[in-house]
Image (cartoon, rainbow, N blue to C red; front, side, top):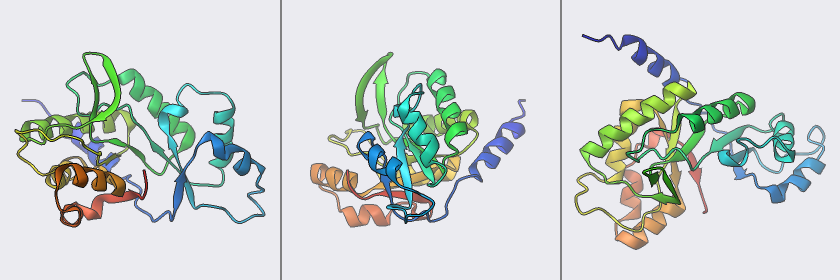
Length: 229
């Protein structure tokens, strides 16, 4: 009989690190913002935003000017990391090379949290470069729960997952997306990023009640809201 008590203890400890303080209103940091932000005297001028969100992949293996900007801005703004490459819903093995690079970036940034999407992005080693919907079934839920736990073990922190915009639904899905998220966050201690625009897109495509969708979410685990896509 195997003893998983150590693994579960580490998981519980990681889950307790989820940052839930209200950071205020932030904006996605893009290269177009660099000149303006770098010209500010952050010790004298009021901040234009409360915090910044970076796309993780833009700074992994980037040790040029972008990394310099990030090193400067993280002294004055809380940073959150938002990625597109966890491929968390795929049947492919997790990409531990990517995860270890992501972990190294967290050590540099010290983000309030790290997020990605409840989706799959590729299979059989082929990256689709799109955020594709997963089937909402008990089997899929169990699969994603185990992968979230593995990722959180590698990163030594809980992750936050965003609801995707979906253009199709699977005929054999047996769970609603809010119920899927509720079961997932309860089983793993991860958080949720609510993208309002994605709710609108999915509602437009599938015809559900967006207000009922949001009311059914595990709202106590929502740590960030995307207001516009």
